Amino acid sequence: MGKQAMPRSYSICSTDDEPCSGIENLETPAVVFRGMERGNDAPLHRRVFLEVADELHRYGKHLRIYYDHWESFGKPYGEFFTWLDSKGEASEEPLPDLKSCPRELLDHDTVLYIDSFEVTSKYALTISKEDSRDCDGFQSMPRFLNAKGEPLRTGRDKGWIFVLRDDVLYAAPKITTVNGRSKQRFHHSSFFGGKAVASAGIFITDDEGHLLKLYPHSGHYRPGERHLHRILLYLKKHGVILESIEVDLQQIYHMSRELTGTVGSDMTKTSKLKKMQNLYLLSGDTVESFLSHKRRMINSGVFRQIHDILSVKKLPEDEKQCESFPSSSSPPLRSARSRVKSLLLQVNSRHRTRMVTQD
Image (cartoon, rainbow, N blue to C red; front, side, top):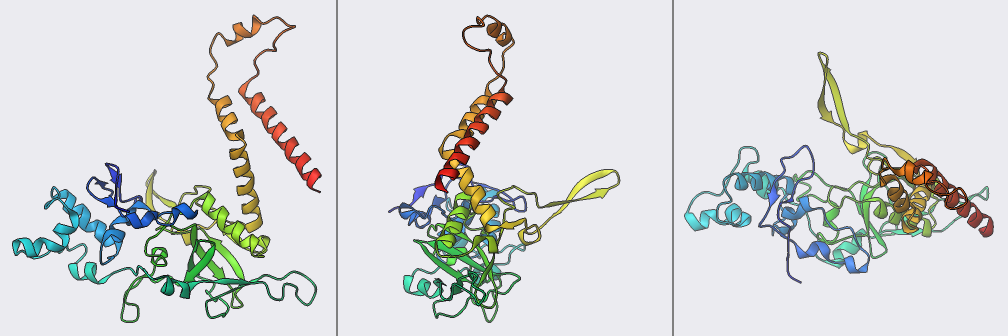
């Protein structure tokens, strides 16, 4: 499978914190699509493509600094990595070295991309259903075990990053600092070398391996609603009591992380909260129920019908047209609000009937 050309003006940046550039010559690495045919429909976000395409897998944020510089100079040599790494060989000139990101930092700050399933399997988790009842007869939470059969202990602060792929969970501590002990960063993209996954995020467990919290946070995969729903259904299938865990919904609710301060009588944006500082936690069963109902409404066409009703513009002659109908024939056109209300009442009635039938 070859590389797929990226659409023109495709952006490698997606946050307000970084300069954003349009890409015309960078190709989409083929590896980011591998596994999608098996239901792993969360490919890496485009802002990581430079990191994936780089043979050394240098940290993407640093590569983007050099990419912006290369682009501002008119894209010399026609290809970014040729300019970045081969300029000295071609013209006997020193390689690019920016003050904002020294060359030594660029070359030594790399991300681990695992290309061996044997290595990846060492990060696999299992969910133990042993001792499903405690001493009082209540159902107890299953435990998360690592590849050695030991309880997963993530700590209650940062947690561990995880990915779900081909119905198997993998987890590890996130490494964001390269030093004498840690030779490379370890991100969500590390588990499968940049391949697509089914879900991604962060787990927090207690010392016994019981799941406490789930955050759908991944800057590399940017999981959406269906990916969060998928991991919740996976956990439910494996016996995890969803009402006993908390799930962060700040991204689904599109909650702002911007902080504003007052300068005189004006409001000005001053900073941006980190995701961990902006959590909006709800119980897992509430989140799963919400996402299940939303999916059902989408699949049954309810949202589309509501959209169609609300998007109809009422013309001035509508009332005249309504008055022209004989009282014994078609009823007058109802307002959009009343039609939406009627539709929702019908859906709610059908849902209650279904629940009674199931009971």
